[in-house]
Length: 274
Image (cartoon, rainbow, N blue to C red):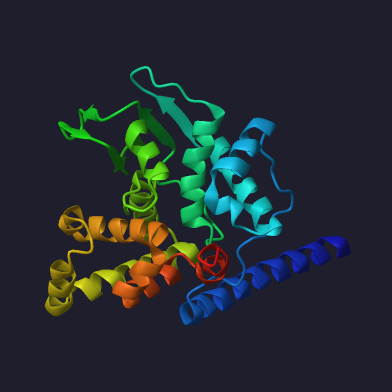
């Protein structure tokens, strides 16, 4: 009987500590716009030799990290590949390298978040090129469908987005940004809350007629960015990863909001200084 009460007291203590930590972190996140910690793993997962070699030779973002963060990045890529279902269409064939490239695109976007995997999609469908969508009855390069929990890519356009790194067009970053926005609107996780709070701040920022006019007259963002506010934020994300210094110079307030949105300050100190 004594041990039973000791166990109950221990469980109550653990429960109280968890609640207290959650409260403290929410306050911390509200003040500093970041979680208390990001990378804590009891056992880091490894990629196969073939996948690891591709990561080391082909993913610039990974190459610019220090050894500690490289191990974190590899772990997250491995987790991503195991978590989501990869589906090919119209004779497209997946290889280990293709899966790593897709995963790395998402992990790069979420590397400053503690809870980086999301349940807002569970399947990644890839066509060899531009495809006809039965859902929208239009041709697409990519799309995110939250109702069906799918991300769809044209491989040709996804690959071009990773090969050409200075045109501010990156299909992977764009569609994954949509999924994270939806995740932020639903999740109570601290990283998701920060993401969505900053997302709404960006919407408020561009709701000002004077600022919107300045953005339009600058011709800095491609015309597609003006389709709607959701697309505008996804396009800013592309600029943030492909030409961050120029984005910071042109629109420093938008840059700062994205930096906080992704919790990227410490990572950028490594990345953009290379």
